[in-house]
Image 1: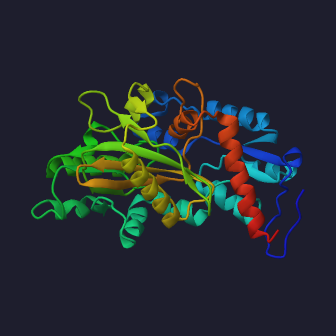
Image 2: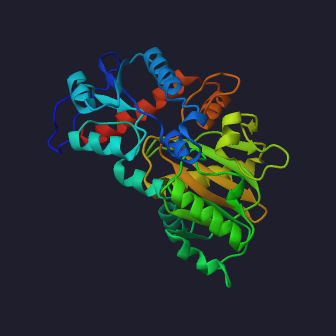
Image 3: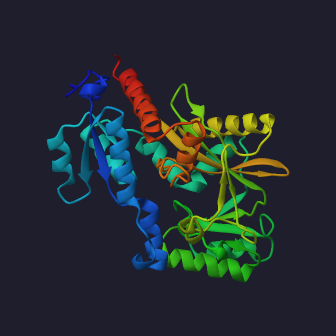
Length: 345
């Protein structure tokens, strides 16, 4: 095991043969959120498949991997295993516990997770540095919608979603709002079911482009992926995502200039929010140019099945000719480098 450094951080061994990685096993947040909306019986939880993918990929990369299940004795189990590094953090609570215990983990810290989770805060930070994102308001109650009755701050149609939703949870066909009555109904429904404030944005028409980013000071953008909706669809709901019958084009059919523009935008957005090791930036490319939608610190990393991976970043890795072993190993090595720099090694 690594020892405590003078700065209070646990030192991480960089030798693969000796590195003990704890793999967290906890239900992913978007499944938990969507269960509140449509009921647990109507949601297929893929957490087990994701953990299995990560365990196999990390083992193939040469690491010693130990699963740690989220349970009442979670902390005791975690401390007993004496892992050097924890992977697959999927909630702010997990990250906070690890920071309190001074156990290094892969991915963004609690500060960045909190910022990225609150989509309105992320958008505000992007606006402050001049990055493009759609105008928005936040509704914590039905009363907050009154501004859209007579003199809206921006024009209909609008788009509504839980401010801290993930994986399209809380997004359905009624998320595109064309008038005040629809807005009230949609906001009240989400306040009552999900229990989160509702983000109200100007609805933007364009091509939905998402970009994975890996690394820290030397961060790089992965090939851009375009989500092509089925005919007649205007957005990607949780249910439509579960059907998995949309088309994903990776690399996205962009010009060289457009690709560079989108990758530069993703890298800037990633750095402004303070992401660490990996993440995903969602954008929409309109006739007026690109706009940032949101950032995901808990982006999925599944590269299986090979023909149609169960994550967007998995598609991007496959477009580079890599599998889960190569993708996860790069992320682990980024974390090791970052943590080594912090301990002054």
